[in-house]
Image (cartoon, rainbow, N blue to C red; front, side, top):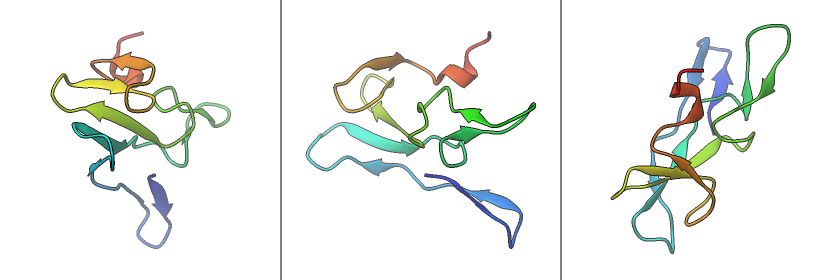
Length: 83
């Protein structure tokens, strides 16, 4: 899960990793900071990962999910969909 490194004033992201025991799936760093999105009056739970800081990708289909084989979230994270 991404985190803020105050010494360099930058969010540190982790690279995608294969999910052990689930061939064809990768766990991705959502890109939010600790499951929170900042901006506005106060922080809020991330729309993409639901506050977990990670999302899963089925590599062959390009579909995102809450967990491998779990509730599917479409072909792109919610924050990239025009509201």
